[in-house]
Image 1 (cartoon, one colour):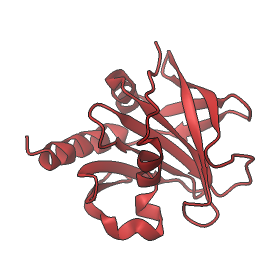
Image 2 (image 1 turned 180 degrees about the horizontal axis):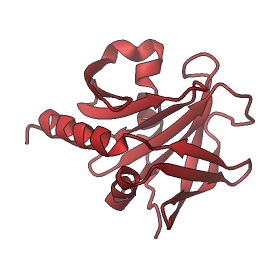
Image 3 (image 1 turned 120 degrees about the horizontal axis):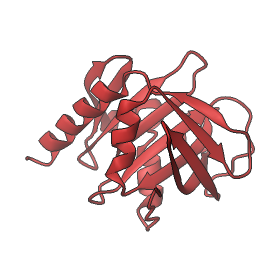
Image 4 (image 1 turned 180 degrees about the vertical axis):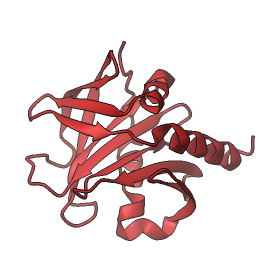
Length: 172
């Protein structure tokens, strides 16, 4: 199974939007709700929604939809020292349950909350978020650095709330 990515001109916009709740751009993100350790936000400029959590180590995980129909993102950001450079693209494998997905991550640094760096993967594969909702951990294997685990506790309810939020933004 593959994460089918579409890196288009809006990739930079989508990646920037992924950082909204933890950045100076926070005013464009309005709180929608909270569930099981996740916050759900409405992006008032893009008319999309995002879910976000922060773990005990201040790592941030964000997931949501871009304004491009059918394109979603997963972003993971840390305050730990990394060699990630803004705009760099690298292959990434993501293990969710027993399924391994492949894609490309775009590095982010400097235009996000002071001290954070990380990457964003875009996908047009809805199965990825169904798998995330059902599992409790996700293992990420970047091409050029060490692997790491992402705690997915509470994602089922957060994704459901995010979907409801998106439905309301799209007027359906």
